[in-house]
Amino acid sequence: MSDRQFLARQIQQWKQSPQRQMQIVGVKYAHGEHDILHHQRTAIGKGGKLTIVHNLPNARIVDNQYARMVAQKTDYLLGKPPTFDSENKQYTAALQTVFGAAFLRQLRLLGQDALNGGIGWLMPYYDEQGSLAFRRFEPYQILPFWQDAEHTVLDAAIYLYEVEAYEGETEKIVEHVEAFTPDGIDYFVYDSGALTPEEPWHTPYVTLGAQALNWSQIPLIPWKANAAEIPLIRRVKPLQDAINLMESAFENGMLEDPRNTILVVVNYDGTEPGELRQNLATYGVLKVRNGKDEPGGDVRSLNIELNSENYQIILKLFKQALIENARGYDAKDDRLSGNPNQMNIQSMYSDIDLDANAMETEFQASFEQLLWFVNAHLANSGVGNFDGIPVKITFARNVLINQSDIIQQCKDSVGIVSDRTILAHHPFVDDVDKELEHLKEQKQEDMQLYGGGTFPQHDGSGGQPQVSADEEQ
Image (cartoon, rainbow, N blue to C red; front, top):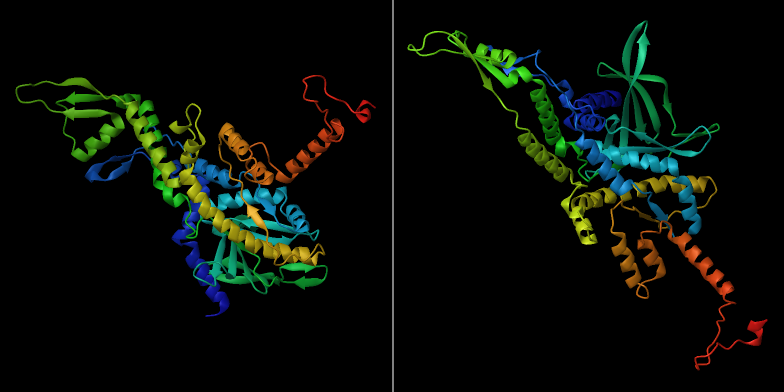
């Protein structure tokens, strides 16, 4: 088997794999494309088989609690920009330039990719202006080939994407493949389980002028939600589907007015049980026969009441179960009523905090891989050689806090810990260095206001303060 045949076989198996299918489902559910949109009303028909019934109300409600959990967990860890801190201030300034607003937006999207697909992908590259840029891929578009069982080092990777094309006047979908190898990128068209090279069939990763360059590592960085690369949708899909189905069934019951009253037709039976069930669901008519002593026909009604409280209780249970399985938090939690203290707030965040810890660990490792490429770029562009210089990356979690409690704790810590540490935890401070600079300027202004720090002195007699000749002038 040639390398090309091997890749074609791997792509064919991967396209139908449960892992990729779940990644596609995760992205679709985040965008509101749920299974309920294809739901059909059915009834037991002849022979006991389910039969689609077309003349009944068929509400298809999407109550997207899954998308809410994805947004909540992304904003919790990545809602605020991470900070980059190094003892080398030149290095810190360079990183802040590279990781600007455009990258921070992509970082949030990487968080969503990691949750929807278990893993997100980012590629560093040089744009047409020769600037370092970053490109995202959907989780289900990348087939990785790992060197190790822990999935930390890539041997190669496949990028599969679809393009709309025309063959004459007929529109068709063409599948393109880009193979990331240590030597660069190979280009193919995937059709009927085979790979056909495109032109140009091979390019390097970097082209600066007429010079072709390649990284010594494959420029594709994984960003995982957890070490097992399990998508969030796998935990909560049955609960999300049950919520959609329950709300749709309730609306169907409200719209199905004729079915709230079933007609009981006496002495006009003769229908077999399967057909009777289908007619009951379709027409709302029930045929019965009286005893021998009760001749004659009759028509009466059988009323069915729709109990909304049952739906409310079940929906509440499903939604709470979805939050717990997604390891999120309920913003309407009873622990937030009144004036909650910080301990109650932290208790509410306990589940999402544990999940965020695992995701932060994976993202820290991803940043370590990304910094290898950034450091190479900074060295080649003449900014400086920062290899081996440690940098601390801190994720600022977007947590609801009781500001009064935190401020009081900061006051109580004065003289025990440094001003920098206190300011780092103060709820009003976003940039510690700027705040320290403001405090320094404020002290200098106070010194100037009070004559360089010389204050009037009392003689202890309780009279007017003594003023020196210099102070009078």
